[in-house]
Length: 253
Image (cartoon, rainbow, N blue to C red):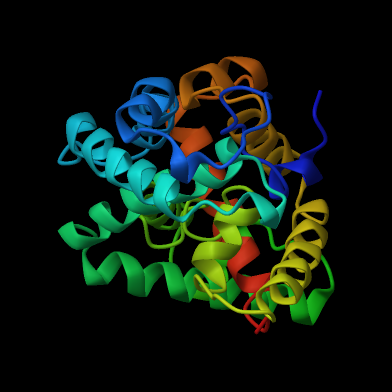
């Protein structure tokens, strides 16, 4: 099985391994025809944890815009394959579209920040992974209320791995900002190292969920069958991993 740490370094957005030349010189219709399956695959992957209000057609449409932008801006001298570069732009365009909807209630963002703060406080005190009962106690709520927060967060983009953890370059694009210029590479490498270290330190079950979701591209139901829990519990574990990483990376700049 792919190692959990590689969840921080890779989302399988490459449709083909074939190296590309200067895509910017290609006919855009040809680019769309060739990479439309990549756009659809990314859209369906993201849709798995989006709320019902997000439509697949909207994701695909925004993804196509990202694909066209990628074709116009791709620079073969940077070293990345076009598929990798396009995957970052496609996913980023989809996430931008979702953000415009502003469908995550402020209360969900607020509660999730409090969970991340509680995790950080517990782990700073104990030097160990914060466990569910400890986090609930730190928040002065019961365990069911804590699980409800995780469930609400799973349907929100507030700290999804699409924003900060999804793949190496796409994560850095969104976490560190889409920063052009010569210092960008260093900042990306630094963030990648911090991210890989943080993921490697996650509890085993959380690492497994991330590896199955991002490396193996299983959906939540399939992951639940693998690890023997319900789909909703997988969603909670995913959210908790995100919040734990948010807590551990909160000092990264």
